[in-house]
Image 1 (cartoon, rainbow, N blue to C red):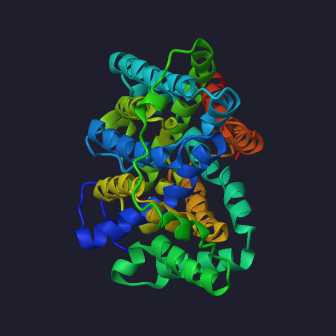
Image 2: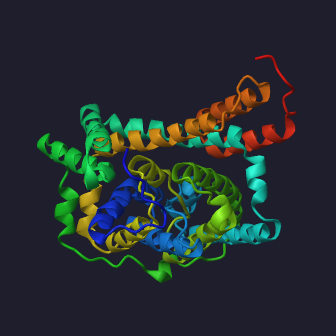
Image 3: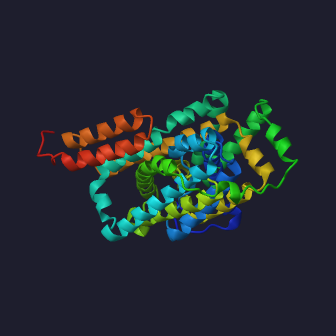
Length: 401
């Protein structure tokens, strides 16, 4: 079994840079997809995610190896104001509102503390929630892989091979190696579109920020549309912190504290709104990278954030990553999301949750059903359902085994 690299450890740059790049590949597709769908600038989204991640790391004391990327929860609201209303300023006012709500929740948590979170989210709740965070994303991975199953399976096989059989440094960069080999295979098969790369050479450096066009402008409708979604993504952040804790064998909810997570995410989103970027959230894709590689170093996340900022200005680099065939990314995300699902099942096993007790069985059943069955914010609703059932259902009496 490969040696685990802990959160506080720092590998030499010649190892840390490829590991950071691995995180960039994991987050890139989703981070630029949100602006593509909503009409915002992908370059600005990259810039906002890089700056936002650095802000998050600073405010959490570099104790949480999490990357912040574009949140899918706000696609509908962003699309309405950016594309339908042609009002980027209103959309950014909504994004800024999310940041303000996060900061208000942070202030509340500094008063009431965060110890109550573990009391209302015991392993019978956290285990299934962690599992559905991964499992609910697997249809996305499968859809990506379906672009070319042969290529996706080859890429997945390469990632598995290096994860199990590689030695030394190669063992901790299986995702990066799988993407490289998958890209080469795709090029041989004639599946790589070089159009964007050729076009990008005409304008190598681009400065994406135009403050006059992206500054938030007060808009009551935008504030009302965005505000309720903040509580959905706060719950999703909670789920991600539970996953991170299980994978890294730490407790980010306690140290540095979930309130610091909320503060970091809120300030990052607020800053991003002045750049013209979408609201940010912690990314399951990067958590999956941690699970596969067993390298939890925060230093690698710092490097990923810096690379993202550089990418936002260098168009050929953006184009090169965007030219990676969808099926290649589908192959690696099958493994990434599957590992998150397995981490949830591991939580249940290690906590020795007794499913002969009706309460435990009901809670897990409802979480799985809601989390996988509900298409819109299923993880958030499942988490709320699990917490609610855990609070209202009576503790089991001694039941017959």
